[in-house]
Length: 126
Image 1 (cartoon, rainbow, N blue to C red):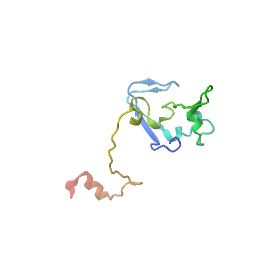
Image 2: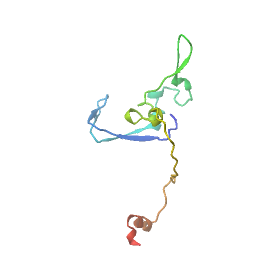
Image 3: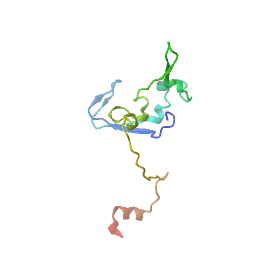
Image 4: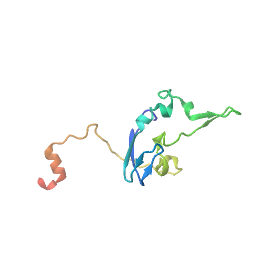
């Protein structure tokens, strides 16, 4: 999911005026977009072997026992399951009930003629 995220980009809205660690000033109500797809391929975040499947990047070996233990990544550098108050529900310990639905999207949208678009906006035209 790091290399092929189901949601390749996302955005957040700034709640209060903010100054980021690099000095960037961000005003309240600004929408900030970030590219999860690109972040999964960033050598700054994932070093040189970033395209390799390497489960050990999530594990740490205990020097005394030799046992492996899971090391969670910073949720802001691996935003697959979100971070902060809007984290993935699957991480929160809720007993969820799955509700199925049928929604599908067409790759390039549904082709409409100009007349069909006008009718959708104002059905009284017919």
